[in-house]
Length: 191
Image (cartoon, rainbow, N blue to C red; front, top):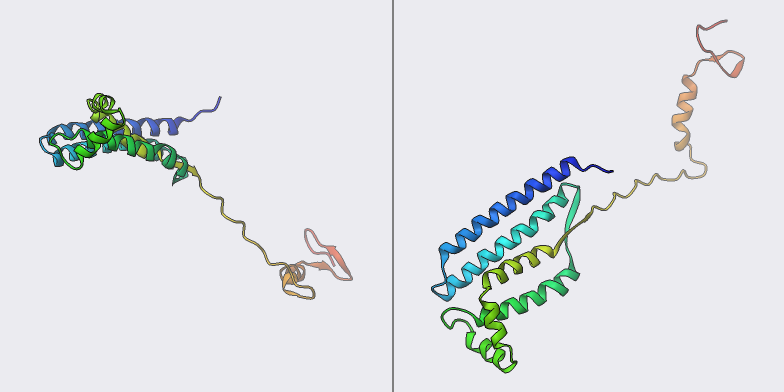
C-alpha cells in the first residue's frame, strides 16, 4: 500500500486552516448585517469568499505535489456559469430593501411560475452564497507541470573534426608502449 505521509499532513493542515479562515469570514459577515442593499451584498460576498477559501485549500494541496494551477474551462462553463445565473437571480429577487432590479427579478419569477421557489430558496441565501464560492473555487484545478524538453545535441557534420577532438585529446594522453600503438601500459612502465 502506498503511503502519502507528508502530503496527507499538509493537506490536513491546509484544510483546517481554510475551515478556520472560513469560520472567521462567516463571523465577520454577521457583523456586516443586512440593513441595506449594500450591506446585504457585502455580506453575501464575504460568505461566498468563505466558500472560495475552502475550495482553494484543496488546490493549494496540489501545489505541494509539484502541480501547476489552471482554470478548468469545462467546470467554469458547465458549473460556475449556471450557478452564477441561479444564485444571482435568487439573491437579486430577495434583496432586503427593494434594491437593484429586485422588482424586475420578482416579476420575471412570477411570470415563470417560480416566485414561490425563489422565495423558499432565498431563506437560505447564505448557503447559496457559500455554495457559489465553492463552485468558483472548484473551477481551479491542478495538473502536472509539463516536462522540460530534452536538450538536443547537434549532430556532427560530415568531415568535421570538432566531434572527434575530445576523444583524440584523450588518446594522446594515454601512455602507449613504444612500438605497439594500440597497447596501453598498466602499472609501472617497462622498457
